[in-house]
Amino acid sequence: MKFIVAVAFLAVALAAPQGDKKPIEILSSNSEMNADGSYSFDFESADGTKVSESGSQKQVGPKPEEIGTVSKGSYSFTTPDGVVLTVNWVADENGFQATGDHLPTPPPMPDHVVKMLADLKAAGVL
Image 1 (cartoon, helix red, strand yellow):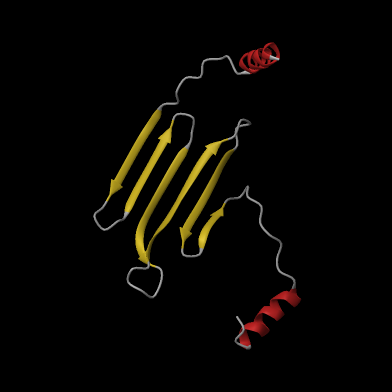
Image 2 (cartoon, rainbow, N blue to C red; image 1 turned 180 degrees about the vertical axis):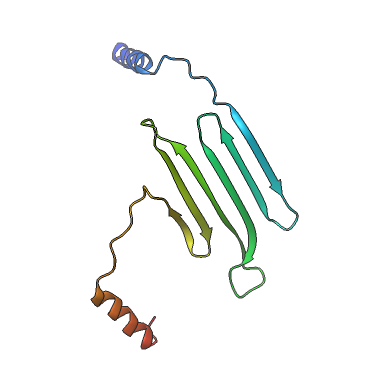
């Protein structure tokens, strides 16, 4: 049994990529943290990856202690086939919302659902 386990570990070790992967150079990097809780950072690497984010504190509820961080940013990278993909995003009291030309989007709501929601809202249910 021990022999089988040893052979299995050897097989896994031999299956691992053997090539040397060099670290990707960071071309630029900036970061700012402020006393009011706001921040921003961005970086760009030699492989074309770009990341940018900023955020600040925001009152998200009726009580003074209900404060949270709202952030927005973007990132882009190049796929193995050379296509640059970009994602823009916002994270706030409504949750995380990402957009990008390559991301799927839901189909439009059917008219009867739109009407039902409007009726419920008019009736004070929503």
